[in-house]
Image 1 (tube, one colour):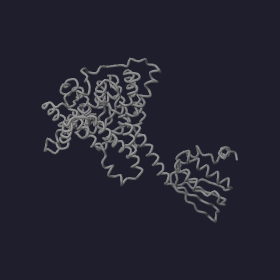
Image 2 (cartoon, one colour):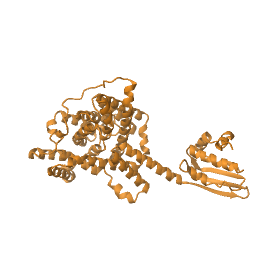
Image 3 (cartoon, rainbow, N blue to C red):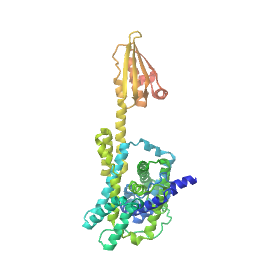
Image 4 (cartoon, helix red, strand yellow):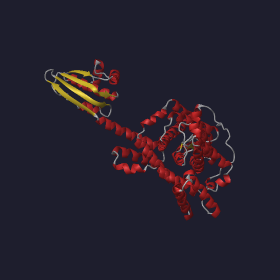
Length: 496
C-alpha cells in the first residue's frame, strides 16, 4: 500500500506541483468558456473542474491525466439547459456518473483495444486543430499588442528550456504566464484578460441536491442526455489515456478510469458542477511540464480553487494572450506531424480512416461522431482485407471419383460470396468432400453459405461430406447449420 502511494503521489513532488499550477492556470479560461458554451454561469464550469480534478486524482486509473469540464461535454448540454434549466443539468450529471460507473463495472473500458491506431491518430490531429481554432477568436479583430504578446509567449515557451539548469527546472508555460502578466500590468496594456471572460465565484462550492421530482418523467428527460454525456466522456477519457500512455511509456487501468470518471462526475453534480471528462490538451500540458503522478491532478484542482477565491485580483489580470500561447503550444505538440510525413508510406485504407476522422470531428466539433465514423471505416476496411485472405483449392481423384475442396482462411460475412463462387456445381461428380481443416467459420452468414454449397451439390446428385472442422467452427455449424436437417433444407430451397 505504501509503495503504491509513494509511486503515485510522492515520487515526483516538485514536477507534479509545478505542472499542476500550470494546468490550473490553463483550466480557468477553458472552464469559463465551456460554461458559456453550455449556457450556464461560469462558476458551474469552475466548480466542476475543481471537483473532478481533485476527485479523479484519488479514484482515477491513469496517474498524470487531467480531467475537468470540457467542450465536448458542454456541447451536449446546451439543449437540456435551454429547455429545462440548471436543476435538470445537475440531475443529468449525477446519472452520467452512475452510467459511467456501470460501464467500468461491466469492463467496457476493454473495448478500447478495438480502436485502431489510425482512429486514435485522427482523433489526436482533429483535437489539435480544434484546440488551435478555439484560440482564433482571441486573435481576430485585436490590436497588434496581442500578436506581440502571443509571439513573445511562444518564444518563452520554446526557448526557455534551453537555459542551463533553470530551463529544466521550471515549466516554460508557467514562466510564460507569469512573465506576460507582469509585463501587461507594468505597461498597462489594454488587452483582453481572464477577468473579461466572466465573473469568478467568490465562495466555496456547497452541497446541492437537484430539486426535482424523482419520477419517470424526470428520468425520461435526463436519460438521453446522460447517456450521450457518459459515452462521449468515456470515449474522450479512454482516447486521452491512450495518448498519455504513449507519452509516459506506462499503462493505465481503463475500467478503473471509467469508474473514477463516474465518481468524479457525481461529485461535481453534488457540488453544483457539470459533467466532465479527461482533457487531452491539459493532460499534455501536464506531461510536458513534468507532471507524472496523481499529485499533479490534485494540485491543479486545488490551486484552481485557491486562485479563484484568494488570488482572484491577480488572476483577473492574466492576459489571454499568455494562455493563447500555451494552448497553441499544446496544439502544436498534440498534432501528430509524423502522420502527415507517413501518408505516402501507410496503406491507403489507414490514411482514409485517419483523414475521415479528422474531417468529421472538425466539421461537427463532436469527437464521438468523428471517432464513430473512423471506427466504422476501419471495420469495413478490415473486414474487406480479411475477406480476401480466403481461398478454395480443389483436386480430383480418378481412383475414388471424388472431388475434394480444401478451404483455407476465414469465412464470414465479407467472404461468404467468394466462398460460394469457388465451387463448380455443374461438374459431373459423384462424391464431394469439403475439407475445412485450414478454415474458420465465424458467423451465421458463413454457416449459411456452407448450407447453400452442400445443398446445391446434393441437388446435382452428388454425395457431400464436410470434414476437418475445428472445435469453434463445429460449434457454430452445429448450432446454425441446416444442411443435415431435411425439413430445414426444404424451407431453405423454397419447398422444391
